[in-house]
Length: 324
Image 1 (tube, helix red, strand yellow):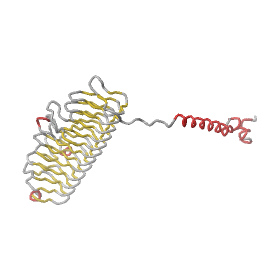
Image 2: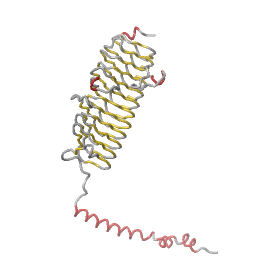
Image 3: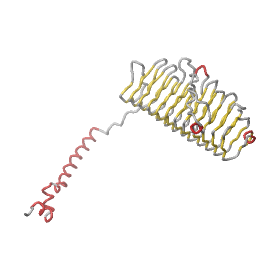
Image 4: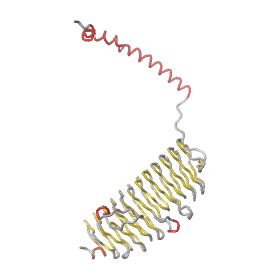
């Protein structure tokens, strides 16, 4: 039996496509072009489309009874002294300013400017596009300058004076934060765990407080200095590791498991790799190094307690005397 439809497709493709309406396309496109031209004239008459507003005017004040949630704020946000602010699922198109003694909780949100904190900042599952500045030079014993972050990203630097609590944090810039005196810090001190920091990490300590770095990936170098105690365990330092201390006990690599240092149990879990040199200065016998692989040199100008240390470069100073 003859199939007229098949026959038309094979012998008269133009007729078949005309039936399908495809040959009307140029005429329809002409109508569409005319409609677009009319729309363009209308747009020209109305004026150009408005861009998204930027941060202008005075800051928006956020307090406990005026939280910011599920919206965009095109201004700076300020948390007044002694106040508390909650920011959830929001975008701050400006800076976040936290006055002394104030606190802010930021969850699943973004800050497109900087964070300037003289109080407490708790950042969870959020992003800061600028820098974080901790203004802990004006001590407030009831609530010191604190930057706590979990599953968060800071695209700039973290600088100033205060306490750090990092858990699964990516800092694309540098970290240069001075830990305050113990009476203004918390019992746990500063703690960096399971984090990646692309820039240099400098952690000076003013008083008898503690600083711990555990299970982290430091893509540049690390400097410990000052009077506080500290540990570095289960961590990779891509560049140099510098220990400058005049009155602190610092353990690199093998360290006792304590609730505040987050070091895992076992030599493999505590091992530290240093991609550059490991330098120890002004330490006396207050520094203990074990379960450490140094790809560069090991340089010590004071006695150091050495355990199992692999050095691919050379040992100099007092560390040369302790060569295996």
